[in-house]
Amino acid sequence: MATQETVMLDAYVIEEIKRRERQRERDDRPAVELPLPAPPPGHEPDSDKDDRGDRGVVIIDYSST
Image (cartoon, rainbow, N blue to C red; front, side, top):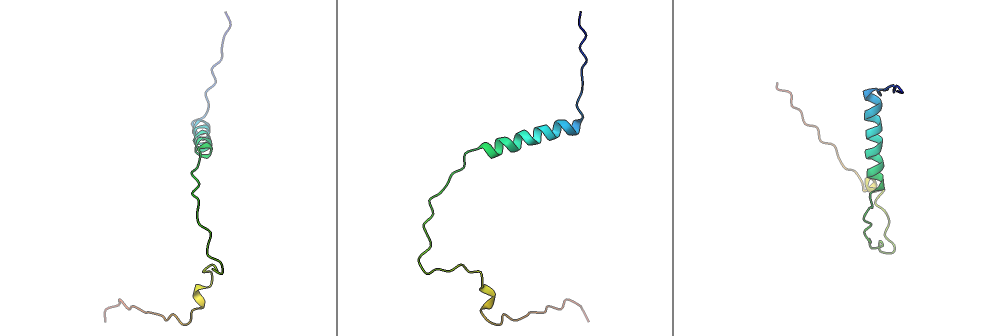
């Protein structure tokens, strides 16, 4: 009769294997790609929104005097 030795993995290792399997399943899911219309010609991204002039500052004092 042959003897078998049972080796237990650490709980952290088991959880890491499960996490990686879930990540792999999530990455393998097909994604829906929506056909988006192209931006109109001459349209520039709004990366310079802060250059519209002075925006002002509001100070709210909550101290009770």
